[in-house]
Image (cartoon, rainbow, N blue to C red; front, top):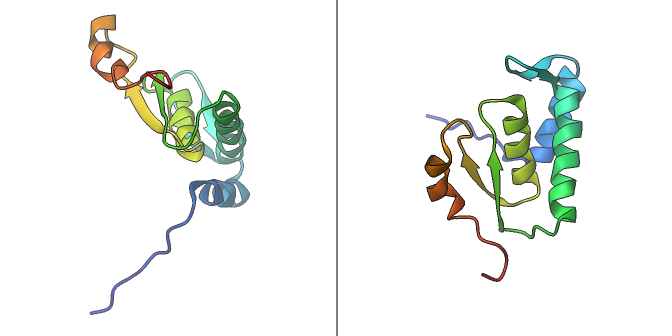
Amino acid sequence: MTAHVTALRPLPDLLREHARRLGTRTAFQDSRSRVTYSELELRTGRLAGHLVNLGLRHGERAAILLGSRVEAVESVLAALMAPTLLVRAGGHGPAPDLTPGSLLVRPRGS
């Protein structure tokens, strides 16, 4: 029996390759918008850069509050690229439902 081994590759490399190969094809779509692979690479890279510029350091937590939308996927990918730890709140429930997740995200130094 032979094992099939796939090399692990960094997320930015995979996004860049998909953008090059599949550029104008739809990567994600919801009821409001769609994003191509090229747009996904550009937008997630830009958002990851903003997270770093805001001062998030390696391993710090970031929270996003979005439902099942294209922007949620972009935010998750950007947080992975930044690289931060992501705490995702559903975004569709009432405020009390968000409390447990938001307790995991504390400002630096607290």
